Image (cartoon, rainbow, N blue to C red):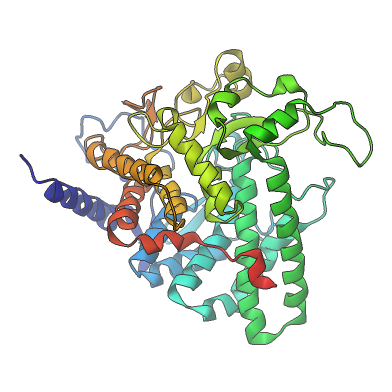
Length: 475
């Protein structure tokens, strides 16, 4: 009988080798990030499935979130700083897009070429890339204690350009950030336009991260401009936090109350602010919620709430403390309760339930890649599992059921991912099938596994790697 410990160590060493030797790339003599997917060896029988990659050889900010988190746990601080400074050099200074960070970048003939959406399918800019930069910069400073980085004039200037972008006046009074379909990890039409959860929790985390970085510069310079800017940022974060808890957080009790809202209300003192009809609340929510759990719904729009469960947005809602400790326990209880839907044979389903039938046709634009249960429409993404693990392990009094859930998820990754060539995502209701167009040797699949191993088996204290400042820290 093979030694389980030896098998685990062999898989971990293989994953590390793939990451350090084939995924990480250099620019100007130092690591600058990792490509999205490692090219398959020449002559591999699966090399033509899927077709020739278009941009999987580029460095995506989104894909490099777990990469930078893992490098921080390994104390590779110079590589993370080089990545952050390179992204900062690429922050747009064009009038229409001033302040945004690129979706991805690649070296061509000795210079960096960035994609701000002009090469993307549908030509949609990835808003999440811009929001992640401040969070990663704060994580770097906290882990490395390199406060001088936060105080650099170019870093503070980049933060101000970012804040100009997200705090500027608009026609909307709500503190949420309004984006088109496909502006984050779900990067193709899937009815996620408006104020999708993932963007809002990232906005909250990035505002607090920017505030933390500004506070370090204020401590060094006592700049009145930064003091005023810090207060403006915190005021917006407070409003956003209250808005998310009021409109996105649901439990069985809040849904029952919502079903009895009066409609067609006018004026300021009303209950049904978004004019939600009871028929807009889907039947599946009742069994999904149970009686002792809760979650952040996927989107809030006038008359059209999106009750789908989005795994990354909810995990980040816990990591950034949008939810308090009791609410986090309610969320983890819901995930364990619904693990048959969310895990099946491969963790972790990106959203539930999938769009189907006419709804899939109209909302996805007949997108064959987002067939029900596939890709971003209910597909299973191993790279998401470490985010949930980080959220859970931050809780000092996690339940036995939740701990067992994480361990069983880790064992699935350990046993299946090497056999499935570290595939990007998995399809079908049971997640047995490698995604129809999934890239193999996907970097964030590999690094997500390494982070799961590190958090569960090496140093659970590193679960706080993406911690952002709390609002009360600035009082």
